Length: 247
Image (cartoon, rainbow, N blue to C red; front, side, top):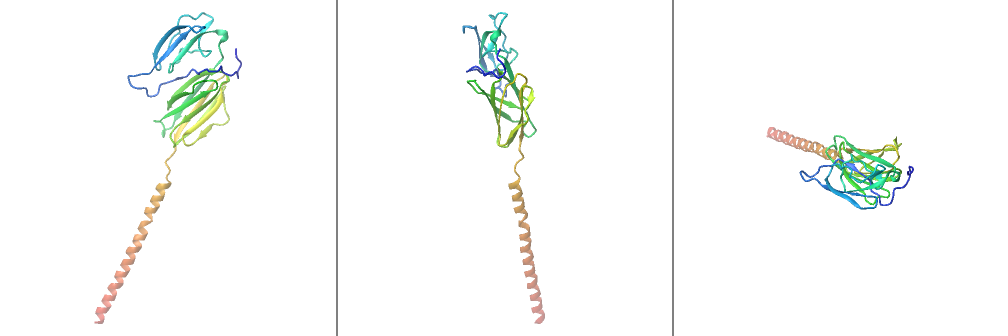
């Protein structure tokens, strides 16, 4: 069995599961699941709809398991990508670690969807998912695998991430502004989580205040002009009355 810290095999891909976000109505995506024996011979090929689960196929002995990239497959996990399940001896299975990514948004961003990319060292592909408030996704890779997670939102979004590795919270949360957050860590044998919080910044009020101040500055000048006109008119009236009295 590999020890914690063992690098993943080249070309391995994670086993992710995520609740589908806003699937097309009545037109669910489909995925191909291929079952192979230890020599690479195809036993069965099936097509499943996005978010469905699959069951074990015939062909594995008592000391064998169905695995993806050397990690025993969890048949309770929904399928949202093509899978290649291979019969693997139990002594050849890699020690797996799970990474759960969750997202919580406050009232200012609760109706938004955020794009998340996740790259594991040794994996050929970068995983791309979208999460909304209250959703989470789980990925399985060998213990010790390093990963980098990036979450993207609009420019007014502020993200905060609490990272947990091997069941222990890291000392500092990662946070950023301008709608971009990057987190890097490695998978421990215990619980691994990235808890992302999203909040929209309040709109900048500087421009509004400037306009209000400019508008509030207009009335004094107007009143000064009116007052000056009144003084001139009053003076002209007095002069006219005095001239009449003279005559």
